[in-house]
Amino acid sequence: MKVKVFCDFDGTITLKDSGDLFFQTFSRFEPFHTDLLEGRINVRQYYDSVVSELPFPINENQLQTFIDSLEIDPYIVKFFQFCKENEIAVTIVSDGFGFYISKILEKYSIVVPVISNKILILETGYKAVFPYSTEGCKCFSASCKRNAILSNISSDDLVVYIGDGRSDYCPVQFADVVFAKGMLDVYCAQNHISYFPFKSFFDIQRLLALYLKKNVKKTKHSNYIQRMAIFLRE
Ligand SMILES: [Mg+2]
Ligand SMILES: [Zn+2]
Image 1 (tube, protein in one colour):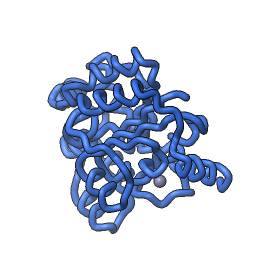
Image 2 (cartoon, rainbow, N blue to C red; image 1 turned 30 degrees about the horizontal axis):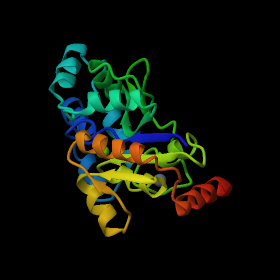
Image 3 (tube, rainbow, N blue to C red; image 1 turned 45 degrees about the vertical axis):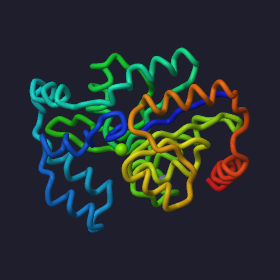
Image 4 (cartoon, rainbow, N blue to C red; image 1 turned 135 degrees about the vertical axis):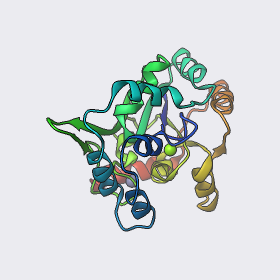
């Protein structure tokens, strides 16, 4: 059995939603964001709009100032180190954009795979693309994180999910161990999904260390069946 961690980025690794802040800072945020929250457009339409309204090209110095202004969880660097030492594979699964995520990770010398939406650089502007989108799921995401998980695990892996928001509602149903804060905490409680609430990655590391010590071997059988059902349907 391997322990595999899938971790959200915006609001989970960064303390605030860096995606929202990025588009607020560089693009035209409204009326698109309100349209999204009130259900007039979906996440892909929202991203199409805010990405196409970005100035071209984005000023590198302004971008760096923005990156430097973002606060991350104070225990995140230690957490990634802990995972490396314990051979725990970590994948970042984000419904945001690799564009700013990679710059933030680079700043803290964190090297992990990132599955996210992408911003293409065209001759005269930017375009949002969703390489991991799926028609098979109707969750509140441009790229559903469910398939990102299902295609990167074997049936006996212990799947750990860490998140805070709406784009995490779907993938937590396919994880064995869930760590949640913010809206995801409320969602899991209301929907009877067992989870550990957390304040920082210090809490997660402490509990994961206990898990490893106890040598938890099996994934929850119900989750295994659910995962396989998805594979067979698609
Ligand atoms: Mg988030
Ligand atoms: Zn989904």
